[in-house]
Amino acid sequence: MLLVGPEKARLRVYSQCLRSASKVFNSMFGPDWDEGRALSSQAPREIPLKEDDASALRTIFCVLHHRNTDVPDPDTLTPKEIVDIAIESDKYDLAVALKYVVPLWLKPRQSPDLLEMGRFMTAALLFQNTQSFAAQTLDLIVHGDGSYMGLLDDESISQFVPFKAICMWETSLPTSYKCSL
Image (tube, rainbow, N blue to C red; front, side):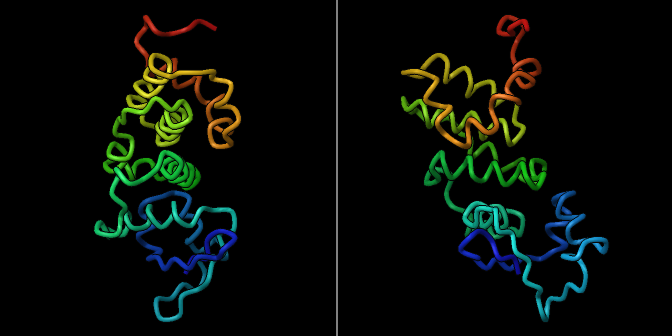
C-alpha cells in the first residue's frame, strides 16, 4: 500500500508488477531495501511516497496493472497532468513500460497556448520520446505566440528543459536544424 503525496492517497499495488516495470521499483521492493522486506498480500505494508503526485502515479499504476478501463482518456488529460505523469515516469524509470501509451498522451493538439506547448515538449523530453520532442519543439518554435521567457515561470518546464534540451536537440533533429555550440 503506497501512501502518496501530502494527502497520503492510498494506492494498492502489486509489487512484482512494479518491479518488472522499473529498475527503481525493482530495487525498492527487493530484499536489500526496507520497503521490500516482509511484503505480503494479506497484510500489505504502508510505504510513504510523500513527494510524489498521487493522481499521476494512479494513472501510471492503472497502465502497469492493465486496468485500462481506469486509465483516463488521453483527450481528457490536461497538458499539466501529462507533464506530471512524465515527471513520475522519469523519476521511476518507466519510459519503456509506458512506451505504447505515451504516444496517445503526446498526440498533437492544436493549441496556440505557449505554456501548453511547452508542457507537451517537456513531457516528450521526460518520456524519452525523441521524435515527439523534436515535433513538439518545432511546433513550439513555429506556432508559439509570445515570449519563451514565460515558460521559465512554469516549475515543471524550467526544472527539466534547460539541461536536457541541448542533448535531445543534438540527437533528434535533422542536421539542417542543429545548432552549433
